[in-house]
Image (tube, rainbow over all chains, first blue to last red; front, side, top):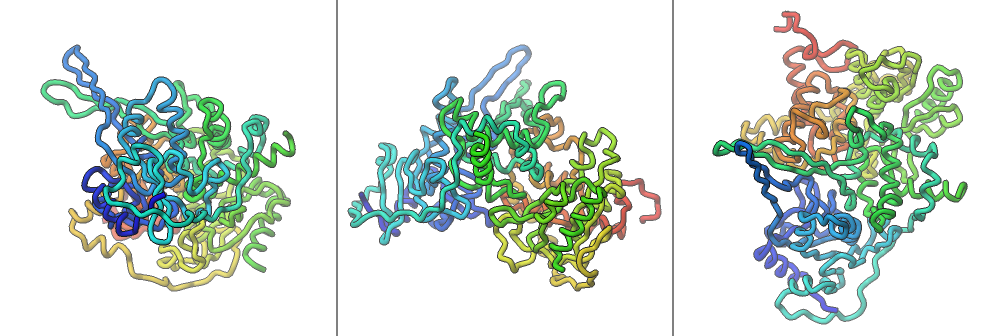
Length: 335
Length: 292
């Protein structure tokens, strides 16, 4: 395996920032977010994880999917597929693992989502291993690890004299700097791990569907949408056509899609006003059943990577690891 | 007796004598974070705690307790709940009563003479020493309304009278606009600010994105600006300054600044501060002609 020095890495990232769009963890008024950077000096190095996952670079909070031009009785639709190559640096293993879940729906199930898959194809991911897990991290309990290279194109791990570089894909190899890299002497250090949390198997979930637990645990839920929006795997969206300014005698509209969340009260409301998930307990139950039962059943991957963002951001301490403990306990009592 | 013991004893008494069906207070979760708790039996009362991480304004839960069928229906008149409040939270009770959102008789207010709450409380980021900004400006440690008072009424001076609005007010309008737009730009429209707010009690929010005719669904700067400025106007003269909106914001938008600015304007114009008494804001009532 090869080694890149701290200064060599900075030079390489500066080069990437010149050549392409480089996205990396950046401090935006005190908030750490994945944002385009102009040079390596803009990058924050010492962090657990940015507030929002790297998901937003592939499945943005809002995106235009097409424009509509109406002239008289003629309607023209123009697809607006994203373009432009990008490199994202400082991707955490939990976020890259999120692509297992996201790809299952957007890329591996028909109809393939051209917006998501185009961004995936046009973007290279340079991972950065965690030396230790954050306080709320539990990636090792959902199949990942702080140094898991799954989904990355290159994987960097901090060592004494710089960073060890693991080449994962050809796309990653093509990014490597043109300077000669040293060979790494010795082993890559192992990350410090947290104690695992219980991971209830799929069959543990359905028997707990009607348990009073859900209404109890959800009583303090504010029905905001933080948990879904910070999550690297939540991918629900809503679509609407909205007007644009008229031009040259034609009416213009855009079709946009935006993040949505099952925690919000109106998410499940249907025509006529009925809401099958009007109760908070039903909504929270859906959130956790989706992650550990519905999604794996329908698409394969578990929709939780153990990143811990929802645990950190929930204003009222609804804690997914506590839910996993509870379901495990309920399943043991009444399997 | 510690505040925790006193709160537990009060809750036990209220529940065992059937004076209330539920006590809304605070507990400490398995991760050591203080969070809202709903206590229904006297046996569960020992879950209740008091500490300086009790930051949440629990009055936001009164809607779901006392209006279980929403605001278009009459309040559930037989329901009576108890709630633990700090001085700031107690002002929300007065506003909710003044706006006919709740009946005061249906709430047993357990007021706590509070020493202030810590920065990062409830989110596992408290250093156990730094008080929240609002607490450094707060000279009213005793709740304005209560049925049971925990702790001794105390008069304290504000620890920090320096107003953080000064640097905003020193800006030119263009600089201020740029400041706010750069802050709003981070918004992800998660609505945590609105959801945490006891005053955001509209059955259908003007700014809801799912079925809104007034504001687009997108996450563009226009939509975000409209939401935040609109919400601030709707809270002018109603915001009681608990700053929960700012605490819950996942991207740290300083929403409290906006609310404090408008509260100051209302106070300057009308001599009115929200929640000190159960009377509605002059901005939500018809001007009598005497205000000029």
